[in-house]
Image 1 (tube, rainbow, N blue to C red):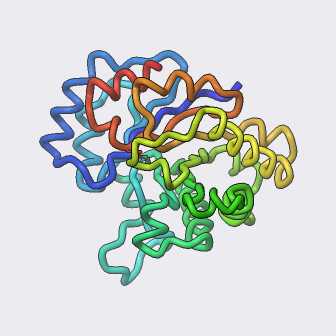
Image 2 (spheres, helix red, strand yellow):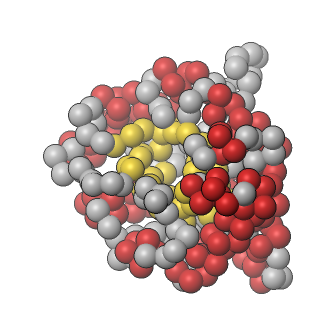
Image 3 (cartoon, helix red, strand yellow):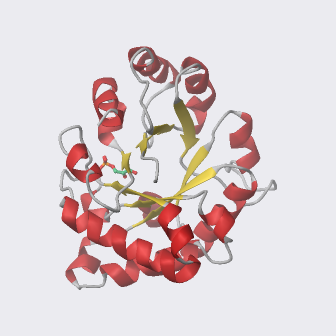
Length: 248
Ligand code: 13P
């Protein structure tokens, strides 16, 4: 049985004071039974948000990091630095990072391995563009991203990861993939994991859907056989909506 995981991706939103206000709005009402609950926050917020949510089951994650331990990499943050401020998860390979910041399948793989070695849970994002979907190559694009991300990752490590299937055309557009469309690709991802790791491992890895998830559609999305959670952008910024999402 895979435990559902609902994660907010706050992207480049919220100052420390805004994050603390959010925490105060949710902290007496955010207990969930059998749902893992995460907020992936901007670096500057992580520590204060973690403190503000102390005593709740909300875990904190980051949205990116560098795969090297340390070095002359101006502007970068290491996995150890993230652990030190209390992050337990990190998003890897979000389409916005692939599109605007040169994230490649190769750096995604390096980051997955480094996150795991530092006991950070990587939330590994994959997904196709509208053009790729329209050309009928969604399965190839997504399974190639999966193969690359998990290259030389052992089955014991692979089960600690979370995958997020986020069709690029559904991110921030209000266009959600239908639950059937989303589940179909999540099934293809699980089949690829089955080829790489065999049944026992592939059945344990959780796959989220992301792209215009809202309180109004999360129930339907979560009812699908191979969708184990959601990675939510916009709606996760609003306390009232976040509470509805984690209590789907
Ligand atoms: P939206 O929920 O705003 O579409 O964003 C999805 C996303 O990119 C989560 O990582």
